[in-house]
Length: 279
Ligand SMILES: C[S@@+](CC[C@H](N)C(=O)[O-])C[C@H]1O[C@@H](n2cnc3c(N)ncnc32)[C@H](O)[C@@H]1O
Image (cartoon, rainbow, N blue to C red; front, side):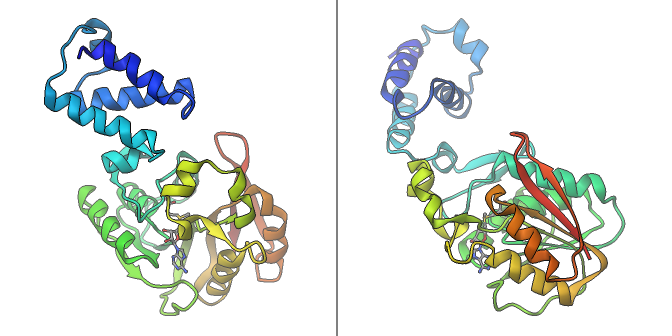
């Protein structure tokens, strides 16, 4: 089969499951990951005949996509902050929105030696990028899922940084040192929001990474406030990614603790997605 013919078949097979723009991006993944082509080379070589091995690989990729599996899980990696990270079904696929959280932390904090912890670290993307950009920081990353910790360790090696990984449940772990900055993108989607979500997220991404009970959507934030009360240094900072729906409730909750100051920030889609508190 010629590559141009494969492109037409790929597009018709995926129509209805993905938008036209998504299919174009996925076809670029086919070109780059499996054929070492870029889009220009494709347009110049539409008559290129695919070998059996190439065709087998890209048909397998297309079949997995048809089942709704996110392409990052199929190829086993993604980009975050323009660095490559391994992913598998034990971790949330790092989102572009989360890059904004990391940007905020890095822009406001320069390279003095401080203790930083990323709570609910998943693939390790937040902790690892912070360490790559601020090599003097002592960075810990806490995560309940052992498989996620194992993957995050591979990501640390891949990007040549040292992170102190803590395999623990945030609701029972108490063994913190004094902390200068806490960063967290915890689970924050209420279970009742499931019906509005895409099936590729629901069927493939780990539930525990995403959902919280409707009755207590701020449970992770509350726990982190409790920890901050004891272990965050005076003047220390807390940076959270948030569900815009619970913004006001979170601000009310913060008033019950010693956090009178807060600052909200919008993501690239102009939604209030980050909040900072200072102790
Ligand atoms: C929204 S994901 C964020 C992952 C990563 N920080 C990112 O931004 O892509 C939340 C993470 O919290 C972890 N988690 C869930 N419950 C936890 C708990 N009780 N203690 C520690 N981590 C937990 C999940 O396993 C998941 O990796």
